[in-house]
Each structure stands twice: as C-alpha cells, then as structure tokens.
Image (cartoon, rainbow, N blue to C red; front, side, top):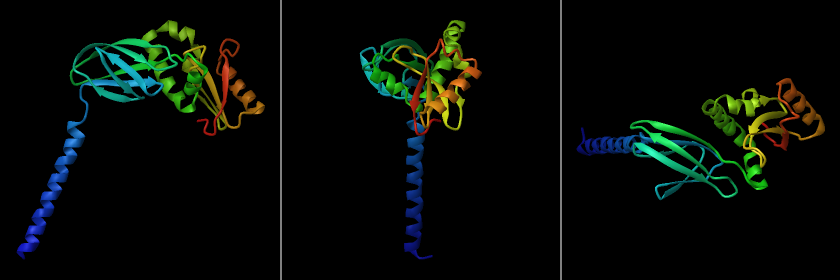
Length: 205
C-alpha cells in the first residue's frame, strides 16, 4: 500500500480518536453528579447562600458540595422565599420554588400558558410536602388540568393568590368562557370560592 495512503489512514484514525475523547470529556466530565435541580417559577430567579449569588431558570442544575444549605430565592416584584436544602454525595436534590407575585405585571408573567404545567408540577409537590392543609386550601389542584379543543384550565398564580386558576382560551369569547365555566363546575371546582382567570391564548394547551 502506498505510504501516503497509510499516513492518511493513520491521520484519519487519530482525528477520530481525538474527537471521541473530546466528546467523552464534554458529556462525562461536565455532568453534574452532586448538586441541586431547581424546579422554579418564574425564570431568572436570584439564589443567595453564604455570600454566593447566581441565577436559575426552570430545571437548572447547579453543582453543590455535599452539605446543608439555606437558600434564599428572590426576584423583583415577587416575595422572597427561603428554603433549607440537604445535598447528598452523588445525588441531585430537587428543590421546588413558586414565588408569589406582588404586582399585576408579575401576576401576568405567571399567567402565561407555558407556566401552567410548571406551576401544576410545583403545586403537586407542595401538596405532597404540605399534606392535607394545602389540599384543603386548594382542593382543585388534583382536578387540573382540564383540556378542551378551544380552552384549557390550569393552575397558575395571581396577585391575590400564589395558586390560582387560569383558563386559556382561543378565542376568548362569551361562548367559550361559558363552556369552560361549565367544565370547571363538572370537575367539582367551586367557582364561587375560586375565581376563574380568563386569558386569551392562541395556543391554549
């Protein structure tokens, strides 16, 4: 075989080896094995502990050394929240945080349909952690979401309540609002106790 061809083959195999090594390093060495997964609403929340501060979004994973931490969560126009977290070696600890809106702008941010499933996930965990009292305060949590072709009814947050009910409609007209209200009543949601927040959304699901 021609020496030049042999050199080309060797060079190609060497390049493949280098690429494989780099890929392994990127996928293995950068994987967080011990740390915290932040299941948070809204996004871009500031986290502070021991004079360290960083931002997290929904499902951000951050490396932590094993130990106990007191984390403070904050965002402009939302109420601060503090939570104790224990990080265990070679485990990812999930932390669920739903900040309470303090302004109309903050409430509108949480009323976006993309936030609905996130809030439902966090609310479900809150029920698990909070037990019967939270389920008594918000009995509709286990009945949502309700999905229809033209609307969906999901948990959300409002300026008056950290856990509320949002109805996303397309279009937002009296006929669809009436249908959504009937669906809520059929699901045993007390609409006299809990306000239905109607929001027009081109993608209500």
